[in-house]
Amino acid sequence: MKDFIQHAFDIFGYVIPGLFVIFSLSLLDPDISSIADLKSKTENFDAGIATVLVIVAYVIGFMIYPIGRILYKGIGLPLFGNTINDDSNHIDLSVPTKYALLRELSPSNFKYVESWNIYCAMAHNLMVACLIFSGVTTVKAISTIEFIKFKQLSFGEFLYDILSGPALVWLIVSVWGIKLFVLLTYRAVTYFHWAAYDINATIKSLNLEEKAKL
Image 1 (tube, rainbow, N blue to C red):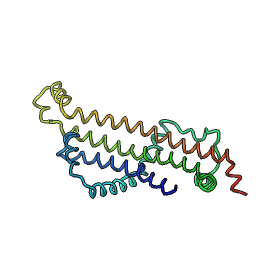
Image 2: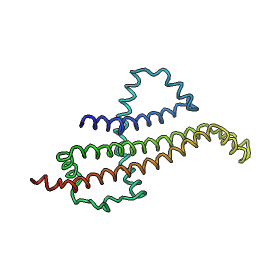
Image 3: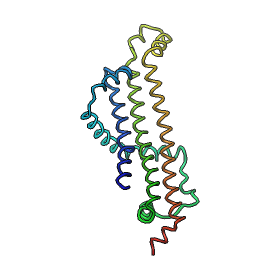
Image 4: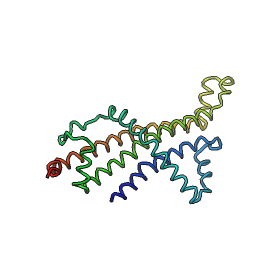
């Protein structure tokens, strides 16, 4: 079970967000002007390239993990609220002590708590990936604008030229990246609370603190 939890954490917490970051950064290729162009570049992928991508994605996911934690705790908790201290089962123990009690005395419940931690890690790492994605697509939008036309056209005509070209598509995609960032922030905070609630409820309902003293 420990191996399963660790592998699940690696895949959902590191690899998937890392692959999204790689996908986002690949959009900076000047030869890519649309999603169709990106699809054509992946047609020649083989198992070797896929393996390298997974390894690189894991490293990237590992690197952005602390950034994701800072973001969801610094932005998500103030924005959506931190209600841990309002929990009716709140216990005045350190987090490491709570996890030690759960891991040693209630491994089945520890598994469920770790599942919330896995989802929280995936959500906050995808938050970082969405910020990168939104930034990259904004750059792509700007790169498609022919600013020389600003001198040749009226402002209205120039604006219409932008909104009728590929820049609009990239900007819409960028906005969706921001929306996903907010949604994932909310989900990260939710899973963070669920893990804390489950820990407190398990320790209190099963009297784990007292059992540890026996």
